[in-house]
Image 1: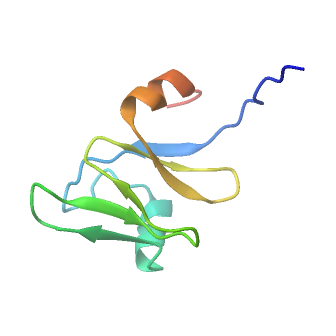
Image 2: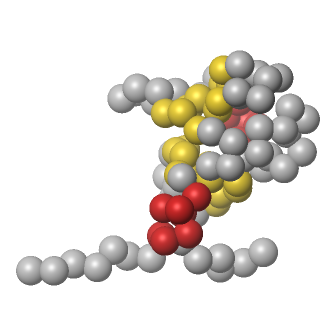
Length: 91
């Protein structure tokens, strides 16, 4: 048998590592405030975004996409995988 993945609409943004977080949507700012998301080497060119999950931490680099799934879960995605998997549905 073969199956096709159902289309799912997610919220996301491309993380730039900007210390001012100007491009960050409210849902990621809330996750930072709740301690779900933190940073390593903040304020340096080597800054990483860390997503704390029960299964272990996930790390995002500058340029990675940060996705909020349909149940509010947050995870990183490399740009090449993102472009192969997602299409824009609205601006």
